[in-house]
Image (cartoon, rainbow, N blue to C red; front, side, top):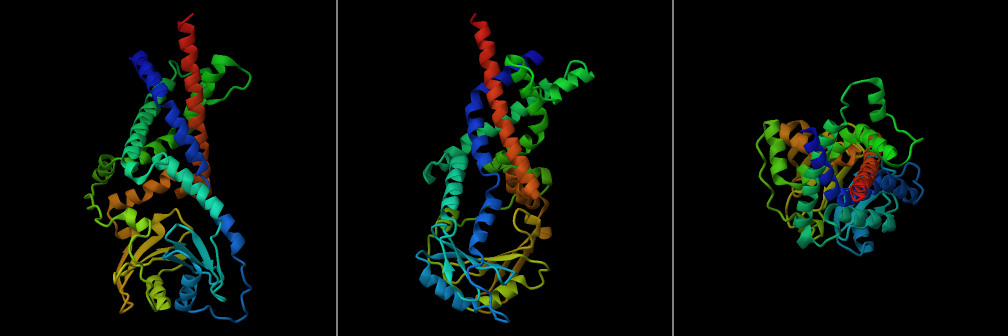
Length: 370
């Protein structure tokens, strides 16, 4: 039985090694996207000096000036609790602009090269850089690779177990050797890398499956004992690319105040500009990102400026709470710097597993042909 499992493990590894290498490299490049962008954006923060005892401009005035300065339609506004930080403006073409809250001066696009780099790598990682018409096929391929990679991790964990649990056997599977060469070194590195990165790689693979396949997503809700919520009918792709006319509401100061009312320690409040006369949809975040448990979704009536609905994380079903963590567990953002570093190390581990696995397979094949 162990021999059959070994050949299944080897064959599957050779089959998906190139794609595992591809996803690992692109994933590693995205590991520190959030902190890198935050560090790059800080260069634009001290745009103007903050006047002493000065009051920020009304948001209506600031946004009106920004609309004249930004060449694309505005999709989202992000307000920081710290009034010294600028208002972040997301345009329809995904460019980001900063508007000084005291002078109204607009800067941007902000960090365009870095943002374009991460956008291109993200497109490669998610959809192989293909057009929207081929996203479903790309997602299916990625999900299949994640499924096979889960099998590799599970079968590898069984094959890793030594025949006898002695100190020397455990050492060979947990401590890397740098004094060896050839097949012995590659075998040691393959086993050791699998031991130390297997668990985080399993989390990355399982969360990738949930995001790729509706059946895996449904299974998550089933395990949580929660009903699967109906899928939204709104065209998310059109919304992402700015289809439709986005109306800029008035009395923005009052609307933001209503959205953040009672939220202790909020850091940012983001308004997605509504289309037509729809309600204003806010996301109020008590963290710097990566923690869905610290977010609230708030709807405000654009006419009365009264709260229509407030959805806190604790009000979600268990399945919805679990699903909210999936994306941030996949990228490591759920753990902040530590989680992102672990995701980077794990992606590099998957690269090493792929390379050593293929080298060991070719070495075995070469010995057969002699």
